Length: 61
Image (tube, rainbow, N blue to C red; front, side, top):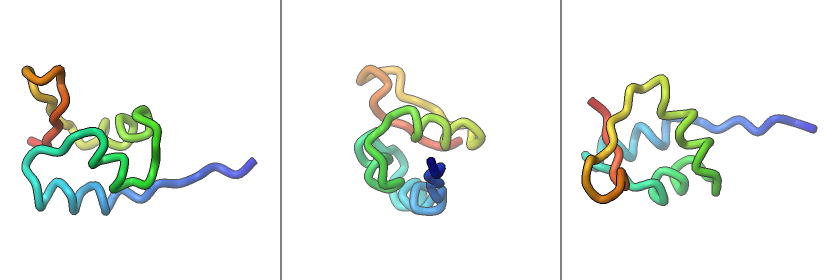
């Protein structure tokens, strides 16, 4: 079985246009339906989540 590779650049472009991005927006940018894929891609970037709204908004420092 072949491993699927997701490109990070569309996600970074989304963060440049918008200060805060929701999980559905990030999944659309990466082209995946899985939350864990997005979290794995965000890990090395040092992302921040919102305290309110159940952590629904993510941003970069």
